[in-house]
Length: 264
Image (cartoon, rainbow, N blue to C red; front, side, top):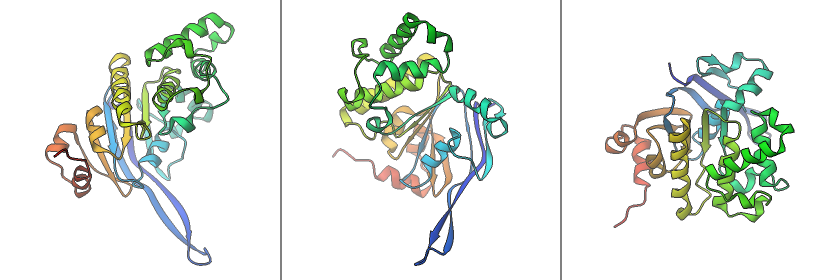
């Protein structure tokens, strides 16, 4: 059984058009996506801007309701669960957002940010200050952050450090699935490889399942076991990473491959 299965997942939006905004156009952001993700694998989801990648990620995270279709996690249809159960299950799937400058609360210290995430899984630590501080320190060390900085605020860190904080926050509830939405696109190229290596090491060390979303095939190839290519709301190709590069089947895959910078 697959760890995560998307069954004919769709999400349509209504868009008002015309001079008087009196006409309605249906936008098919996600249009019949079926996909299986195996436990412990990193699946790369790639496509051009506007193809529906981020909408699909929000459907998986239950931040949007599908127009039709199902998200099945460990054999359980998430749409069938009551709201309180969804909140409980959300500890098992966490998201890393694109922009570490925007995704962290500027008024919270790193300790408060990480402690809040840890307490969603370990409520008993709320009355154990020493235990909570140890848990925060372990989390910081796991993502390569100096624990001396635990009382600092996000603006006191570089972009790469902030993304490490965001990754640590995602790990706080001890999830089984991480969904990373363009997690390195806002970072300097020199920092990107460090974050990619960190994510891959975390997958290996913690047995995580991961969906890595990007528009950049070269980045996805570096980290993903398999790659799914998305175009106009649909999955048009799924293949092992090397196989997709060696023998692309869809036209959009060929276009994305041609967009990778070449050293001459």
